Amino acid sequence: MNARTSQLLEALEDLGSFSYSVAHDLRSPLKNIAAMSEILKSSTQDNPALGDCLPYADRIERGAKRTIQLVDDLLRFSQTTTRSLERKELDLRQIAQEAVADTVPDERAHQVKVNIEPGAKALADAPMLKVVLHNLLSNALKFTRTKAEPVIHIDHFAEADHDHITVRDNGVGFDTQLKEQAFGVFKRLHQADQFEGTGVGLAIVQRIVNKHSGEVWAESAIGQGTAIHIRLPRAASSPSALPFAKVA
Image (cartoon, rainbow, N blue to C red; front, side, top):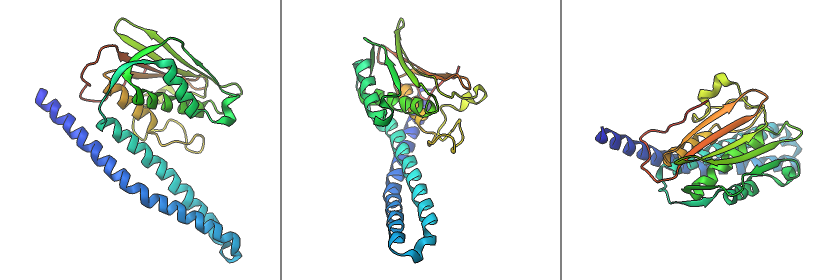
């Protein structure tokens, strides 16, 4: 069993390295496509004869930028496999405040209320934990966009041998019948014309939590917001062979 586990972990690491290489190589030509389409759009302003090209150039630019975002998400996803952990006790409130500062845009800072549990600690890798909170906050901001008074809570309570972290919002929520898709790569729970995204954010969260030998699961209902729960062990241990997420 140990030999098979070792082989599986090695295969997952190789796959992560391969994905990183492919995604990295795709980024440069995609940026060139986006840049060229911008030049074409600018040219139509000086040459009315090219006016018919504008809608096509606009579609090319938007498609290239969406694909660049997907490639960037794939790069981050691959890095969660290859990067080693550096665990230490962290001030969760400080990490969360940094994530909020990076995530909440200036135009929404006066509208969105973010409550962060004071005095919370967690044993984790600081950059990875910040990525987790960044992704969860980005989701919460996105899905509370239609709310007049969006509220996000980052809560913590200590268990016997784990730290339990919850990021909760009062957004649109999602259908509980789709909950098993929540942490899948490229799985989207809402239509693209309603909410943007690549369907990789929660998969990255799940991969990082698994790397910490933790658990992650979701609770949600349509119109009643979403809560993402994370349990991180207080003692370092070896990561499990396969990603694990449970969905409530």
